[in-house]
Image (cartoon, rainbow, N blue to C red; front, side, top):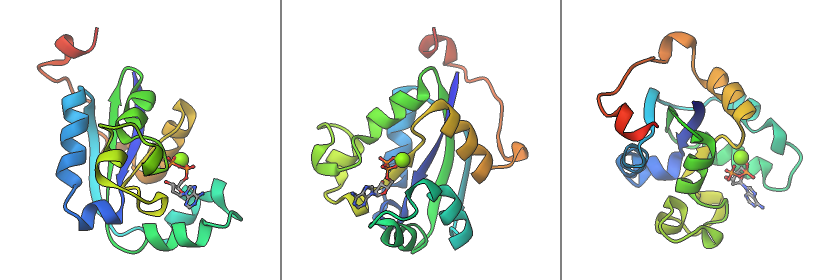
Length: 149
Ligand code: DAT
Ligand code: MG
């Protein structure tokens, strides 16, 4: 079982797409284990995107993610990292597969709606950056045995 951090970024929140993102992840069969709605501080944004520091788009990225509230969530499931990134689509919406969120709801790389962890290790690190242990719920879903083999 893998865990991934999922963010509905400010554009997704402003456009009323929180429900769409949650629906798609629920429909996929992933299980939610934590969620909170927050205004991201500059400090959290800089830690989260530390790997991109120095890149030409970095300042715009920090301004974007701190510009309005985000919906932060943790989702889990078998191969959750790969599955969620597939549901999000490629970073550039014009390269995202038809049917993916970024294809279906976005056009520009700087307004690409969502974030999802890109590896198991980054998933663990990002979940602990954004959530405390107490904010994560370990639970069994009635349908689990029909979705998880
Ligand atoms: P992803 O969000 O798909 O994991 P990433 O980690 O490479 O993509 O980059 C983080 C975010 O930074 C991405 O969602 C949008 C922005 N970004 C990445 N590459 C960019 C570029 N070449 N120009 C503008 N923004 C970019
Ligand atoms: Mg990334």
